[in-house]
Image 1 (cartoon, rainbow, N blue to C red):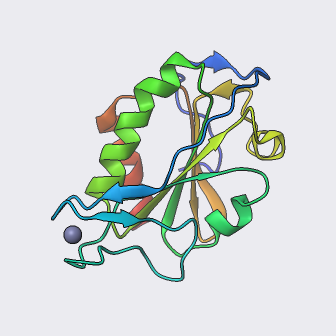
Image 2: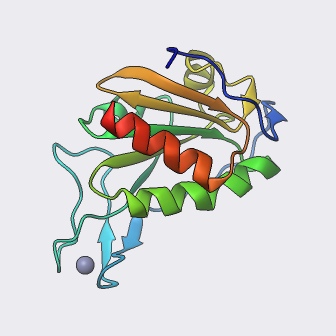
Length: 163
Ligand SMILES: [Zn+2]
């Protein structure tokens, strides 16, 4: 597979600079037992449920200040460059949640609001959003522009995990 070829684009929004703050906590229920766990921005291994020890879906929000920490993991990373006003981004968000759950323990989803992270948006060339960037061992291995259906993104993650 080529290093950085864009996939056929789905629905996108031009990345504009709006301002509307958005904060989301990283306390999430365990898919196995329902216990609410705090999922860290970064960790040496992978987050597991404090009660039943199941792997937790690892979804974090990062900005320019903490992106390096968020990417410092040996898990496969899927960066979601998005913005609150972007309709296609909202379509992709639940798909990424589902993949984070399916691939818990193997995949880390790092959500970057491009409005609040201009440096990251530039680094990953997020002219249109959503832009999804898959990183493995610190290198970009896949890049997808536009909303894609779950089977497409599932195959992308599965292929990236085994390459
Ligand atoms: Zn649990």
